[in-house]
Image (tube, rainbow, N blue to C red; front, side, top):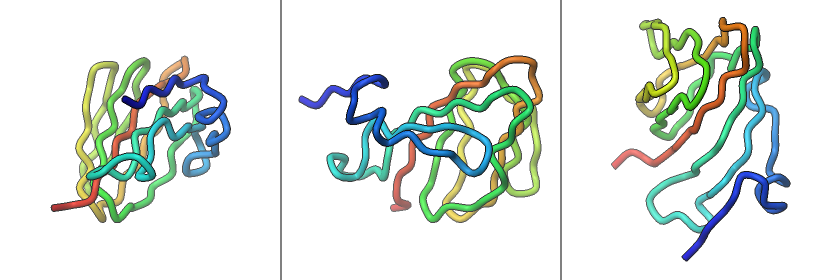
Length: 113
């Protein structure tokens, strides 16, 4: 069994600036995962943006708290706590926190089949 807490020293050590707008921590990575690239926690302060980018892995953003304006490909839509957003591998995407508070989300990434 592998259990990692967001505040474990090994997880805190992975803290990084996520696409110029957020702060993320790699909770679990491909070091231990078999079919996934990573499971990460992220915070996006009010007014900040996860800049548009594309990844070679399929991703899901799950909004835990807050919200914003999500763009995937040519589609743009408001997202809120409880929403899961599927991002196909290679698809450009961004998240703008246009709310008055911080947005927290989980990002899960996996290789396409």
